[in-house]
Image 1 (cartoon, rainbow, N blue to C red):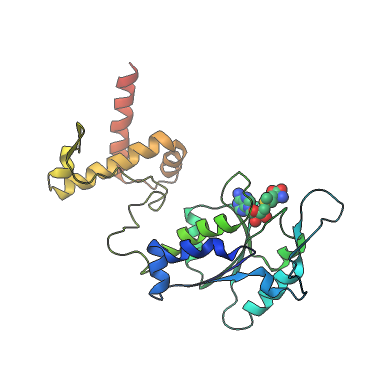
Image 2 (cartoon, rainbow, N blue to C red; image 1 turned 90 degrees about the vertical axis):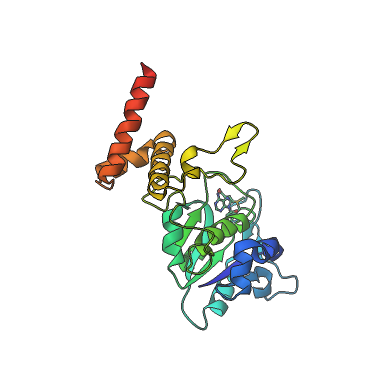
Length: 252
Ligand SMILES: C[S@@+](CC[C@H](N)C(=O)[O-])C[C@H]1O[C@@H](n2cnc3c(N)ncnc32)[C@H](O)[C@@H]1O
């Protein structure tokens, strides 16, 4: 997979692209990430990328010309990228979208800054994406969030040590189960016995129960949806009945 990023602050990506899982995926050539300085696509002496908003008001707006020029330059060869513009009013980013984007051969992420980008840039954008209902100073952090979630889903990026299936939201939207590592006893807190038992079927069942329990507590609407759509197994429904019975007893 290839991802191009268009930004006025390319330096913000340095650590992100060098360290950890993403850094390894890039250095081993599993993914190709290229960060471009929007100023490199200007034609004036001062490399100006922004201008005052028509109609007045505070702040500056990213001009359309350098963005279109960058787009044309970057799409001259090879596959046309799927173009994302980071915007607070965009479609809310989630695991499902990350999965969908990870299947695209090429992405181009445009990072807004200042008051945002000239509306006409939308002509080259396939999807406006928000990472949450709050306003950041620019689209660089959203671009990193999107890349991190997308790239770890690209086959070969995560090693064997990191499993995707057990992650929250990966399996029908269920949340993940609790994890423990050594020591078995720490400051009076114990690891659940079942995890020390070596009994794989029991561990599997315990994890399933914990995942359902956590989802029911924190995201009850997910359980409701899975029930409605008939997406839970008999075993899962039985575990949920047991949890709900326990709750009723607790309330008495
Ligand atoms: C200060 S914001 C612009 C806010 C915009 N004027 C508004 O009314 O929402 C500057 C840029 O940061 C990025 N940005 C800020 N918050 C974001 C979010 N929650 N998700 C995605 N991008 C965001 C966008 O690229 C945006 O164009």
